[in-house]
Length: 70
Image (cartoon, helix red, strand yellow):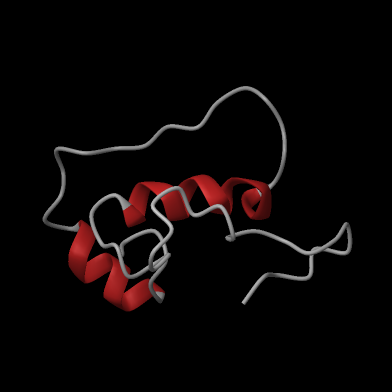
């Protein structure tokens, strides 16, 4: 939830999670390219981010214009 919630809600959650930090380095891509990975991480704890899809295989983009999936 801290990776996919609005900023205020995410901050309320993450301020208590100082034991966990994600550092993304190397490779390429912008934040949109990283979002499927963030969804998988969040879904491993909160399975309603990608209901019925543990690997969030349907989470992403339809095309190169970056139109998001529902």
